[in-house]
Length: 250
Image 1 (cartoon, rainbow, N blue to C red):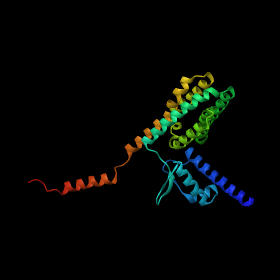
Image 2 (image 1 turned 90 degrees about the vertical axis):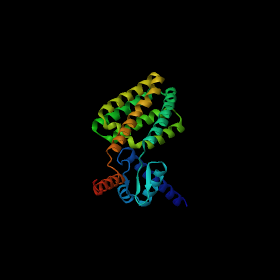
Image 3 (image 1 turned 60 degrees about the vertical axis):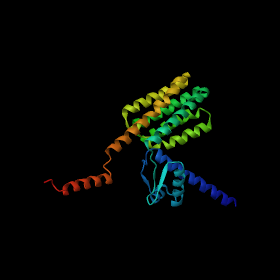
Image 4 (image 1 turned 135 degrees about the vertical axis):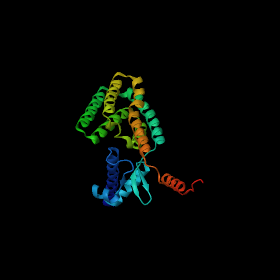
């Protein structure tokens, strides 16, 4: 019985590892929005059974990270403009609360640690390591939120961040925006060190808004460049055909 219980524990642990691995691949941009996730390919890549992959995809669907479509399988979730704006508004509100609480608990060692993480972020960017950039950026903001000491708040922020995975890479593709992000990270650290509540309440909307705004611009540009739908093309063709066959006036 003990051996069987241990085996069950190992299976649960392995399943959790698969979910975590796939989630990280999405968060770091390895899998893009609407990209298909093929069970057999993922199983071979991760060296696990197709059963574990299917279970992991179902768990990720419940979190809103994956969408299951009939006859097509799983694909990375995408978000529309309205949902992106709603998630952003909630996240900014939670981040402001976290900053207020963090200000009451931060100590010099925390400031030093944030400088270390920020240095890691800059080094990753200098190397062109996008996955390292995204990981270090997440570590920076998770650390600040963790300073709140409120585990419920932290969990809510982390869940919303997962929903925002689709624009994790957006801001980092713009050199001009990267300069702003780096500067704002320094402002976060400085405000925490100096007890500057006003800056900590103003920064989240601006800082997290960069990625949101750039991604919405991307969606708008994509929509504008989308070819005419088949219905529109058919209507145009039928109209032209009708005009061609219409008898000429006497």
